Image (cartoon, rainbow, N blue to C red):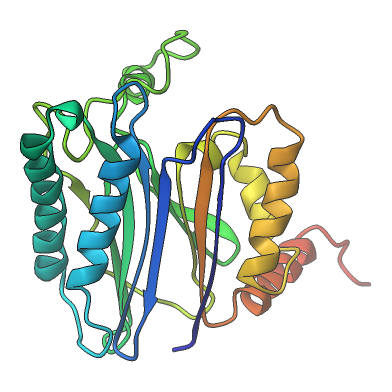
Length: 258
């Protein structure tokens, strides 16, 4: 099964970029991730880099992977951050979000892990099929039925390295279909886009590079403040699958022939 990907990471209006992206596409497996150093504490960029580097160091391009194995890697990434906190008192509160997509190319299945408010979106036949749920107070309020509470969306209750951190969230392993697409991104990227804009952009492009570029145009129309990073992953030919789906949907509204 053919896989293509593209990535972007931009500083936005910040003084520095605390985001990290990572991607490894091997013969038997693949890994794509973003990490976003949590603002408000010193060392966010260090935590993000440690998480990314630890995960990539464990990955072996020519070996198959399993959810149990990748779960162990996530644990090692957090241990690396906690170890660095002990060595340098100035970094004792550093933490990072994480969103990571793993693909077993032999078994043609995917699964993902996240902590914080970095997200994994899964698109199937041109529409959002699944998306991670943020580990944030704002998400908890939405889940409770409250909207527009004014709560700062950056208030997280889970991140790698954070005090009292909870276990990361893991998806089930999902059988892949030709035409599946994934967007792995930080909050600086997704917060300036609607789900409809993501879907519409996917239906208008021929490559993951074009998809990111078109979404970037929509982001540019908003007031960019945060770092923004994303990895777009295409399995097979999403452009063909979404075109077929669009034609099928359009046919529903055509008047019947005499």
